[in-house]
Image (cartoon, rainbow, N blue to C red):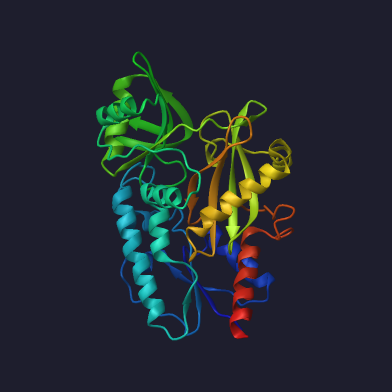
Length: 362
């Protein structure tokens, strides 16, 4: 019987949902290697022949401290340290797999590193001809430098993104002109620095906006021209599309009255049927093709989550990000025609793993 091992946080729902999918396919429960053990440099011993899945470290406070250093888990920043520690840790996982007879890694750790660097990810997608918003060439060292580069590019509206991060942490939707500045973000500017908040807020005092950008810039910034997104019912929308083994299988519409559509920031799940009707059959096919092409830039990854923006007018699309751990969509089954109808994202991945093993045994 196929042996599986998950590098993750024991008891965390990503690990649990994957284990439940394995059970549905008659596979034994995966072993779990805690992220904290990997990050502390403990000796990693794997079962010969096991298939190793790397999960997100999740929201485990101890893992976060080992990745970013000690501090409040809600703080914004430390992305550079986080990325360096993650890259070192995933390299250790790869080394453990390579020295274990018959073990196979179900991910490419170099691809994970690229997906968690928005600058590198954007460059890879752009080089492959995947539509992405134009980006400032950088580097952007502070607010003054940001405004200077925006003026040179002739851009009045941009998205400012920390180079390393996820879940919209530190992202700013910035509108700047000669006499007005408005920044929309989930960042809370406090006396002890920046913190993540579940409340999206606006800053219109340029001193505050400059302070936020200056603090974020230390870990590197990626700045894209604002992509005007389509809307339904007074809410802007985008899609999270999960691509499994090269095929788009699941999609969720995220709708919000703010520029940030993330569900944990007040975004809501929209109606995929409405979106498909708006773009039409050919437009839907083009959208899925773009997602497949984005995923093809990371061929060593079993599954990725592609954040797809649809432009005003429902004709243009652009990829905002590709997420190495973008498959956490509980209770969402595959969309019609995607080949994973009735399956959640974890079922689809376990099925793909089983199919690969069967093909390899022939």
